[in-house]
Image (cartoon, rainbow, N blue to C red; front, side, top):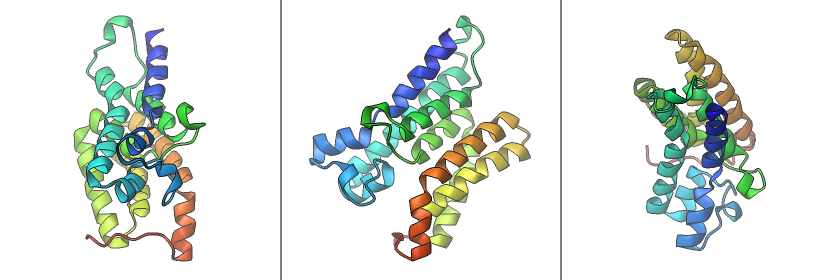
Length: 198
């Protein structure tokens, strides 16, 4: 029973829209009405400022990795066998993408995915950071960096023979790709925002 309760908890935790809450409370801005209208980290950084934006990204990373970390460390083993830790990370990511608190809309699961992987395997998270920065440097598109990095997770899982990572990483990558459809259309049209700081 506990393992199912944790799934629900992970989803609800992931569904907390920190960008909307902090944007309104601190800046008086609803990020769903500006820029890409996406209640995620990138849009928050662009329109809420670095301090608030990075706070939101940090909180999104925490909500993606908290239950993963606790399960991975065996905190709940006394209650019986748990699901694989990454299942809870996915539940949090799904909560972030389809938040019950904002009419089942949400972000693009990038920061929550970072938290999920960081809590499960910090070394793999480090490799993915290199993939992200390299792709970002070459393409100048955050969306492209996020997509390539998400795709790298199941590939890394196959390489190191962690097939749970490969499976759940693939599901996560498909969600990230699904949520970036508009970005791909903008890249094709030449209207997607490009970074200038690297």
